Amino acid sequence: MPGVTLLGDAAHLMCPSGEGANLAMYDGAELGNAIAAHPDDTEAALAAYEEALFPRSAATAEEASRVHKLCLDDNAPHSLVRFFTNHGQAG
Ligand SMILES: Cc1cc2nc3c(=O)[nH]c(=O)nc-3n(C[C@H](O)[C@H](O)[C@H](O)COP(=O)(O)OP(=O)(O)OC[C@H]3O[C@@H](n4cnc5c(N)ncnc54)[C@H](O)[C@@H]3O)c2cc1C
Image (cartoon, rainbow, N blue to C red; front, side, top):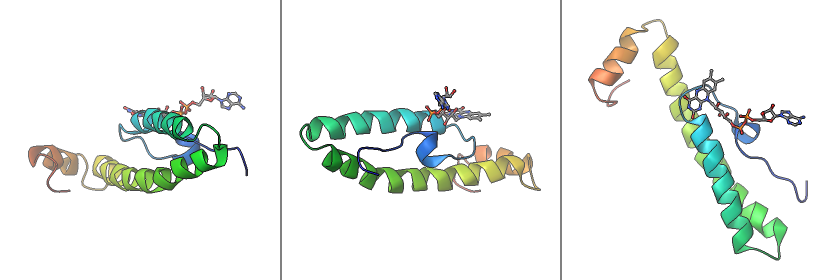
């Protein structure tokens, strides 16, 4: 829809992992940058913003899902303890 975009949870709702608010604020900053870079072309600004938005949020959603499983899977809390013991190297 022309002239409309989404950011934060509205664009990429994800499980609680400690990244949702960070990502929402980052989206806002990137949207502001895109508008400033295309002051006379809103559609170009939104297209540039959205081109980076979706891959960025997909990557974070994958990581969020991994952390969520560590917290709640059948091996929890041992899987989460192992994650911290290994400094995040193993899931
Ligand atoms: C249990 C839990 C724990 C979390 N822990 C963390 C954490 O530790 N770290 C972290 O980074 N993130 C965390 N998150 C995620 C984080 O809270 C969200 O990703 C973040 O708040 C998203 O911000 P937002 O501005 O996109 O949406 P929101 O914060 O949901 O803001 C949307 C706003 O729009 C308002 N609204 C809705 N509909 C309308 C309407 N029709 N008209 C007007 N206003 C409307 C709502 O009332 C709300 O104030 C957690 C989430 C949950 C559920």
